Length: 134
Image 1 (cartoon, rainbow, N blue to C red):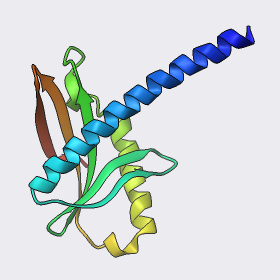
Image 2 (image 1 turned 90 degrees about the vertical axis):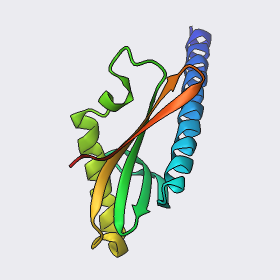
Image 3 (image 1 turned 180 degrees about the horizontal axis):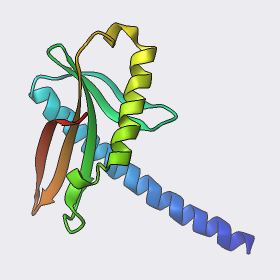
Image 4 (image 1 turned 30 degrees about the vertical axis):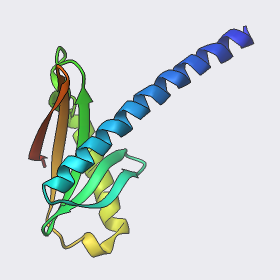
């Protein structure tokens, strides 16, 4: 029985590794896209006890907390709809924690963006929603 449990955990770990690898790929794609739009990276994958923020960037004087979402299929609402009100609250609380730990950014105007990536045949459609939630 212990062998089966270990084997099951290994399979699940492999699945999580693949998901993380896919997520990392699309975060890199999002970062490159946003840099081309003139944003500057402050930090990436910022974690708190509330959750994680994928990208923190600056656009001119505005501090942007950016959630990157990728969906291969849109049958369940797509990437944008996956940023639920609960997810939004976790991002907001993580942003507040970041600002408390980084007083240099506390005076900057802030916004919460979503960068949604979906596949369309062999291309990626990127939809950047500025001020997606408050």
